Image (cartoon, rainbow, N blue to C red):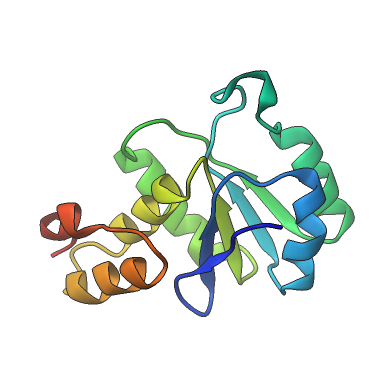
Length: 137
């Protein structure tokens, strides 16, 4: 069973998903999947994007590959913002634990005077972003 963590009405994150999870994700109403985990990062045991993409697209979902390691770069933040504004919502982004995905989401909203709200939304989803709160101001 996939561990979906709702952040807002239109955005959620999850730890690594499998192709078998995609049906449950679609049934939960998600219309877009964003893969933030590079293929092979977790070795041969890690589910690959190809089968996840195929299952998502077969169910009529949009699939976007935006894999990255470490902190999101300005390019990743920009692309995440574009995905969130253009892709059908709600959006579910996933990576190994969900931390990369929620960090990219948070940084998209940085500088909008919503740092406390962003950190609180992340905390409600089980992620501590207090360490980057100054970047969000």
